[in-house]
Length: 257
Ligand SMILES: *[C@@H]1O[C@H](CO)[C@@H](O)[C@H](O)[C@H]1NC(C)=O
Ligand SMILES: *[C@@H]1O[C@H](CO)[C@@H](O)[C@H](O)[C@H]1NC(C)=O
Ligand SMILES: *[C@@H]1O[C@H](CO)[C@@H](O)[C@H](O)[C@H]1NC(C)=O
Ligand SMILES: *[C@@H]1O[C@H](CO)[C@@H](O)[C@H](O)[C@H]1NC(C)=O
Image (cartoon, helix red, strand yellow):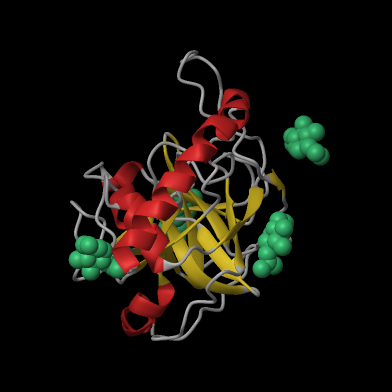
């Protein structure tokens, strides 16, 4: 019964591909403008330019996705806190210490999380520490979550000079999809584990994109996840994948307290 349902579901989902084409032509990822006042814990991780989002989990610790550092020279990174604008304003920090999740798997993005200790304590009046869901808490299946970030707002492969970045913070609501659907759609090109959840529209058109990874995902004002991986951006049958805070919360607490 179950596999049958899955196949039927995938077949019917394929009908969406045609319908999604017009949305993809516009290449709009579908967010709206936001300000740092609304999301004061959101931060930017720059390596010459923005490479990832992140979230302030203590006055001197940022949480982001494990793959964001990507073997790059640690001394070059800048963490920017307390500003709506991409790449300017706010308060900037260097990385003083890096703590990967001990089970982080770079190949499959399992336990995709790293904590970065800042070289000083954040004092910007526009910055605030996020509250997080507890270890082991259940996901609000089917509910909308909110993703925020300064990553690409379109996915234009035809013009490499096109600046795909927004000037300011973006926010986007996405519905959480059930594990069955996530696993079925994502298993073609990735490994979906218990440390992950996925969210998005199967017809595509909305989703996170390059340099949004590592950024906060919220449910009712609490941090429920961080953006982890996706196949291209906002494509049909390609929901975004998030690291569950409920799977890594006790590790976070152990490191930062
Ligand atoms: C969003 O912000 C950008 C740049 O800050 C601005 O050009 C644009 O008009 C804003 N969009 C809306 C819908 O307010
Ligand atoms: C921390 O790093 C920032 C950015 O490079 C720098 O401006 C600041 O002086 C540093 N603070 C301390 C206490 O080293
Ligand atoms: C999620 O957001 C969409 C778009 O704003 C809305 O149509 C839908 O009703 C919301 N779903 C829930 C469960 O609130
Ligand atoms: C996803 O599907 C694979 C193979 O069907 C299965 O081994 C795995 O446990 C599933 N993962 C989740 C999180 O449902």
